[in-house]
Image 1 (cartoon, rainbow, N blue to C red):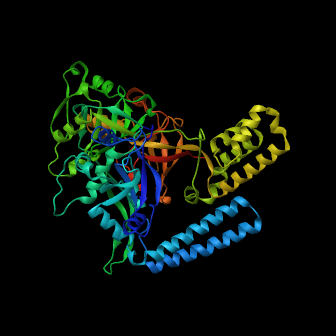
Image 2: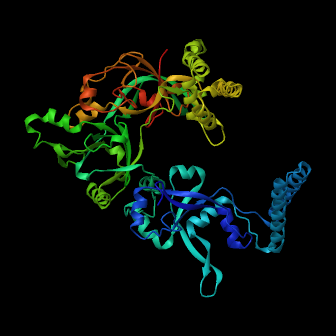
Image 3: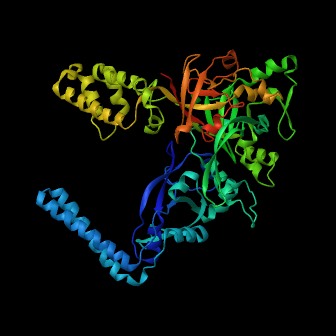
Length: 585
C-alpha cells in the first residue's frame, strides 16, 4: 500500500447513467486516493479487498458534476465538437506537424464514431439532471461493470459490483462528490462511522451525523495513543466582553439592516475546540501542535507539561490527587495525558451516547487518535506573503512602511546569488527551468556570469514583481496556530477560576499574546486566515511570561492569545486555528 493510502477511481455520475442506459461505452473516470485514516485501518481488518497492495474496488468516489442529455441535446453537442475537431485538423495540416495531424485526426474520427453510436441508440436517451442522479444513487445505489476475463471460455465478461452511498466530507460536499462502498461491506462500515447511533425517523439530525461521522475518515500523518480514562473532558467556560458592534438584523419589511450598538455584550466559549496534550506522548515532529481526530471527536492539541503543572499544584498529594470531569467522574491527576472541553466531543449532541460508550469505541481502535495536521514553518523562512485582501485592508498612508521588506527582498534577489538560488528551489516545478538553472550553476559556478543566466534572472525577477503587484507583498511574518489562554485552561482543570490567569493582562487598544516567533514587547498586526474583511484585522502586544517556558512547549509556530474578556473571537468571525501575524512597522 502507498504511504498515502489506496488508489481508487472517481466516477462522473452522468457517465455511469449513460453506461447503464447503453448510450455510453465507457465511464468518465479520474484517479483518486482513499487516504490513510483510522477508517481505512479498520476496513483493512474487516473485509476490504486490496489489489496488489496498492488499490481497491470496494470503495469508489462519485462526482455529481453533470447529468445526462436528451438525444437531441447529445447530437447537438457532438456536432459542435465535430466542427471544432475539423478546424483543429485543418490547422494541423496547414502547419505540417505530423504528430499534431494524427492526434487531430483520431480525435475527429472518435467524435464521428460517437455520433454514429448516438444515432443507433436514439431511443435509449433519458435526460437526468445531476440533482436527480444524486437522489437516484443516494437512494438506490449504483452498479459499476468491470471487465473480467473468463479463463474457461477464454472470453471477456463483466463483473458487476453494486455500491451504496457511505459518506461525504464537508470538503467533498463542496465539490458535489461522495464516497460509495460495496454493498456487502456497507453495514459494517456504516456501523463503524456512526458508532452505531440509531438515527430517529422523525427530525433526524442527518446533516450533523453526516458531518461528524466523516471525522474519523480524515487523512492522517500519524497516530498518538491516549486511553480515554487519561482524557479529562471539562465543561467549557463562557467569556464575556462589552464592545461596540454592528448588528445585522431584519426590519419590519423583512429587509436586512445594520444597527450600530454601543457597549454590547458578546459571549464566547473560552477554549472552543482546543486541547492540551502532555509532552510525554507528544510526537517530536508535531512542532507544538497536532490536530486530532477520532470517533465524533476533533481537537487542536498543544504540547503542554501537564504533569509538571499537576505536581507543582498538588505538591505532596500528587500521587493520590484526583481531577473531576464534566460528568463528575474522578481521574487520577498523575494519569491525565489530554485535557479538552465538551466542544471537542461531537457525540454529546446525540441522545443515547454516553461517555462510557464512546470510551469503549476508542478502546476498540487500540486507543489511537489520528494526527491530521501539524504546524509548519513558512517556505520563505522568516518571511511570508500577504494576500491582496490583507493589503486592501490597510491605509495607503502606511504603504511605504509595508513595502520596506519587499523592497529589500527584491534587492537581495538581484544582488545575492544564494537568495536567488533559494527562490528558484522554493518555486521550482515541472513547468519551469529553475532546476536546470540550479544544476548548471552547481556544475559550473561561473555560469552565473553568462549572458543567458543574467537574462533569465532578470526575466524571473520581473515576473515575480508582477506577482507582487497583485498584492503578494513580503513581510516579516508567518501563519501561526492559535491557542486561547492555555494557562487558564490548566487552572480550569483543577477547579480554579480561569480569570486568575497571570500570563495576560487587559490593555486598551490591543490584545496581549505570546509567541516565540517575535520578540518580547513587540506589537504585531494580526490577520485572520482566510482574511474576509478589514474587521478581521487585529492589534496584538507580544508579552513573555515565565509560565510559558515552565509549563508549555509551543515552539515558534504557535501563538497564545488572551481570550479572557476580549473580542478577539468575534473580531475574527469565530476563527478556528490559523492566523497570519506580521510585525508592525
